[in-house]
Length: 77
Image (cartoon, rainbow, N blue to C red; front, side):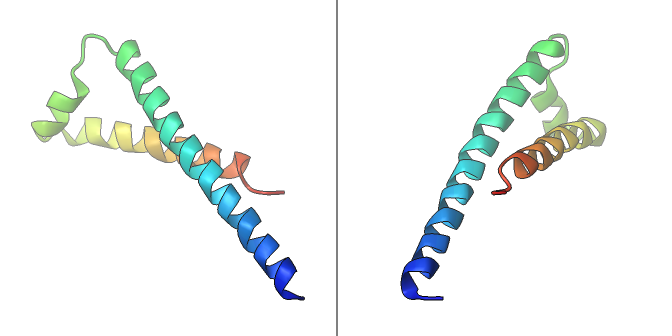
């Protein structure tokens, strides 16, 4: 393996990392907005500030599940 192939592999890996990061960032934003609209009568962030662990677990599960989906989609091949 020569230096050109190694640099190409690094560039591809960096590209997929950037795609994954941007996708995850946008996905979390969109998913939280949809969740907030779906639960209009509940102030999730106020509940979390008050120490409501159940709401924190629900939001954490939402973010982790989105991460699993983004990771499976952006897996380069």
